Image (cartoon, rainbow, N blue to C red):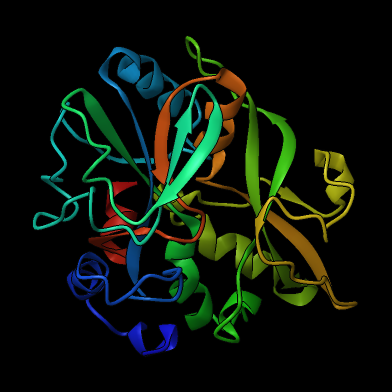
Length: 266
């Protein structure tokens, strides 16, 4: 099946396909209208400081749920899920270095692991489409959103510090105000843009030089619009020199929460 075949799937159907190994690819555009989640897992000894980090930096790290130490099963956002198996790719960081990407955490899970689930801007794609805002990363099967390292500092908490990762959507100039209005309704999914216009103002000197994802050229009638991104914890892990497990960029955890419920949660 193609990724586009899953656009109307239920989140539990996507999770089951991932868990069974029937889907191994990126997940944006799947189960549209539901909240996609970024993920970060830290040792219990660091969990309080990372919770503080998320609360101090709600734009890149909007919390959906924090699991108890050693518990891989969300109680609230996806009750039948298991964070060890229900993402199609995971990244393992050891002392700040990315050492491995794996399809499952079964062999890596520890009883002191604390999981943080955080909203993702890919969640409000459906709301943008319904508002008539085209999205380049959904136009073909190989489309990806562009993700970049910025010079925007996050507020430090304990050992956690570093700069924000951002995502960029080329946006029609005539649709800019509408884009801001639509996305600002969903702070649980990063909300309104963090920056609009010249990328160099936030330390990005070449849009073709992506951190991850895919390059989307800004056309003459468009302007680059940047959102805080849930890949930020991966950058924080590297700058802080800490052990962490995260989702691989674009391989999201699908929650059962809808966009409607997200407005209430926010």
